[in-house]
Image: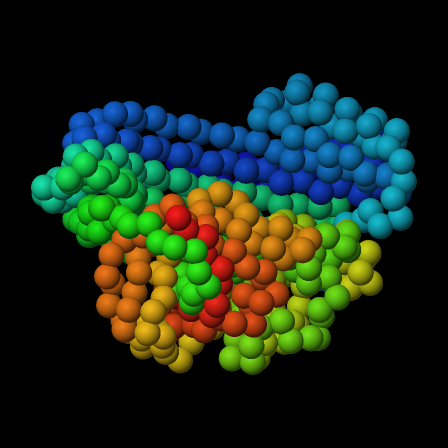
Length: 438
């Protein structure tokens, strides 16, 4: 059972009080307790089972415009005294930065609606084992599957965020995750793929046989891939991959990247960066959402933002410090986006596949080939050749390349958006990308 709110609150308030007595003019602190339980299977046998219980704090003290931080997982009374003294003394020796401060008081969150992020259910280890057995039995029912790995993780967390401006916010959260990796082999070809399910509430997860069968199907579909010639061709990104485009966009509009001038979108506010059919939303108050939250890492209230509306860049992701560099107020995005997604498109999945007579459908990318400064994009990839909406054969050992300035302007969305992650995108078609093959 995770520590209750009062326990965490008492630690936070005592640290703030002691920091003040030692000379801190402002203080911010987070205290977190997280309990994680994991069971892993390999080839239908128990491989590992463990449990971790972490209790930690992160303390930041200010003296005027001087600032320093310290973290620890040792929260004994004696150690906390030493930590606070050390943090305050370090602050005194730190150079001043005129932008250092707590968030403006009027931006701090005051209303904490119930987002239903915590499931009281405790799933016993034997139930986790039953779930994983069914996953692996389902995956192994496919005769081409020669190896399976699966895991089930339950995480329960509670935390308190407080500061010397009388802000105090806290909430519990839970996360249940199960996954399966299947390895297929046939006619000398060997491939692997995966499926997973992750939800804040246990009963919302996929059934174990759904996870196992999906992993096996994806792994067998990739068998006996072909190599293709280099060409310029339309690319379709599977939903598992398309969200990476949105993640790159989010990183490129962070206030820190914009203020430092290290983003290819640094001068694009108010300009068209996508086609006018594209809207991008960050919504922190989705019930049961994996990325949902009541406030950001600084306690600033979070509200739904349209980051892009009809192709026009409308907002950055702004925290307090870099917001001041840009002469903008924080919009509650210290720590990044919350539930970020493309508003779904008008084409069905089937219609998107048929928009062009020939395209590459990408199911896996390899490496991290995004350059936020220039917008250049280049990654290894595997997938399938698609003609007239039909999957013809798997393709491997290719490299796809382009620039995000062009990618953003030339993408078309399907209407199959699902909320499986904190960042979500539907299936995406991108016109005219360069593919390097054999």
